[in-house]
Image (cartoon, rainbow, N blue to C red; front, side, top):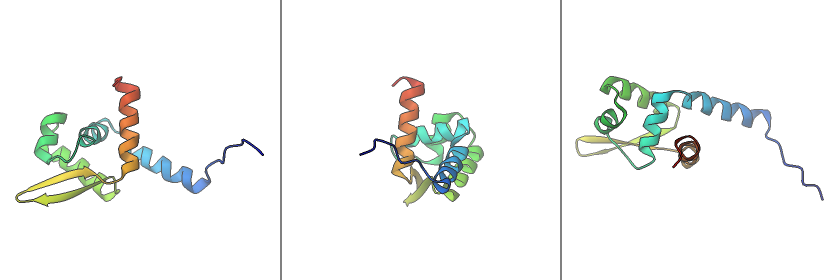
Length: 101
């Protein structure tokens, strides 16, 4: 019996690299960190992240098109949430490592 780890294949590495590339922006990371606590509106994220409404909306749209976040309408508000539990785990892990929590 061998204790050799199974290495990821090229497609898996490309997929992870693509995800990391999307995450590799301070404002997107900040938005995703805020969303780990639960769904938020653009206005809430704007206030929490210190970014303009248009910037937050653009970041959310890009992350939505990449499948990182989804949204749900509740009366007149649209709430954004992290779409993928694995992404949520990555963000939480990064937070623990780099923010000391």
